Amino acid sequence: MIQIKNLAKIFENGDSPIRALDDVSFTIPDGQFLTVSGKSGSGKSTLLYQLGLLDTPTDGQIIIDDINTESLDENQKSSMRLKNLGYIFQDYAILPSLTAFENVMVPLLMLGLDDKQAENKTIEALTKVGLEDRMHNLPSQLSGGQQQRVSIARAISHNPKVLFADEPTANLDTETSKNIIDLFLKLNHEGQTIIMVTHEVEYAHMSDRTIFLVDGKIVSDITNKIA
Image (tube, rainbow, N blue to C red; front, side, top):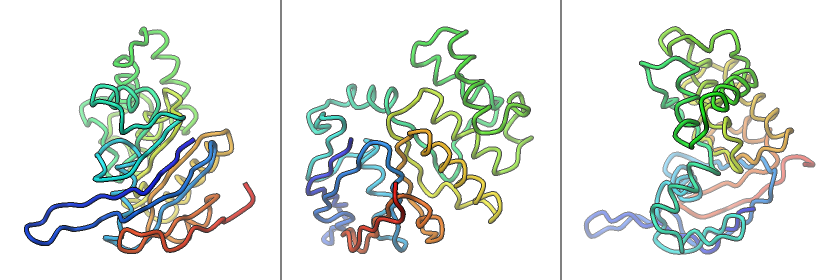
C-alpha cells in the first residue's frame, strides 16, 4: 500500500541544519499494524507526519496506492487526507464544546455525507470503540481514555485506508493504555492498516512489525508476530 523511498527531512536551524530523517526506505503492505519506535528526537513523529501528508519531506518519495504524493498539489493532498487517512494524536484533539457524537459527525458532514449517513456512521464508529452509552457527553464529562476513544472513532468513521496514531497512549494510565492498544489490535484484525508511533516497547511488540529509528535512520526492522 505505501512505499517510502529515500525519504529525508531537514529542518533549518541557523548554520546547523537538523537532519530529522536520513535516507529512509521501506514498504508497508495493506492491513499491517506497524509501530515506529525510538528515543525522543529519533525522528518518529517526523516520519509519521511525512507519511500522513501533514508535512512535506525535503527529499524522497511517498507512494500511496500507486500515487506518488510528490506530484499532488496542496488541494489534492488535503483531499487525500480527508478521504483516505485517519489521525489520532496524544492530546486527543477533540473540540471541548462539542459532544462525542458531534466531534465524530462534523468531519463526516465536511466530507459531503447527508445527515442520515453521517449519523449512522457516527453511531457505528462510537459503538465500535465502546462509547455507545456516552456519545452525547461533552469531553469534560469523559475520562482521558474515553476522550481518546472519541478521537479514534472520529478517525475511523469514514473507513480510512490508513490510520495514523502519534503516541496515542502517552497521556493515559497503564490499564487504559492497554485497552487502547487492544482496540487497535481489534481494528487491525478487521483489516485496518495502522501506523503507530510509540516509545513504549511493550506496545510496539504487540504489533505486526516494529521499525526502530536512531538519529533519523532505520536501525532495525523487526517482525513481531505472524500476521
